[in-house]
Length: 165
Image (cartoon, rainbow, N blue to C red; front, top):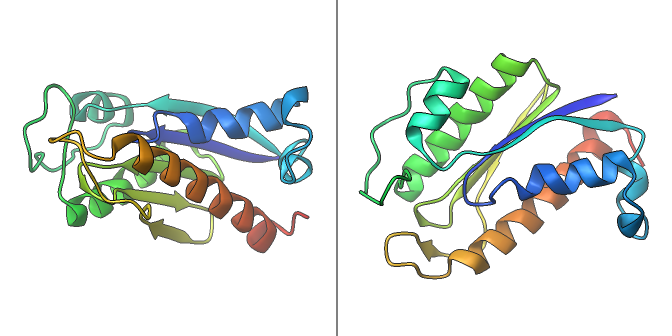
């Protein structure tokens, strides 16, 4: 069984929850074309929504850069720093839980960033939707796009690296 853990911000833990539901055999997802790839092959160790710098640092024992923007209690970075932070969080999660696959997401101003870290490779990408957390622009569109793109990438990784079909 392939172990997975997520520490998510802009995707609100929804990547991990979707994987968990398929892994556990939720009947309402049986018709999803990727159900058979995940069910019986993957289990979720943790799926976390971590919007704050303090929460991430405390739980994952990692020191993140100071946010580029002030936004209530949540961290908010530039696109460049979102990519850096996504990598840092995925690495910290993988080191902490010793899972096969660690997934992290973060988004401030820009397209956000997702890092999927496997035992062999690091995949870093953005959503296809520009959003601005500070101004509240395109937040839900970016989230939906990031969730779908992350899930599709996760499935492709299962096929490519783990030989699942």
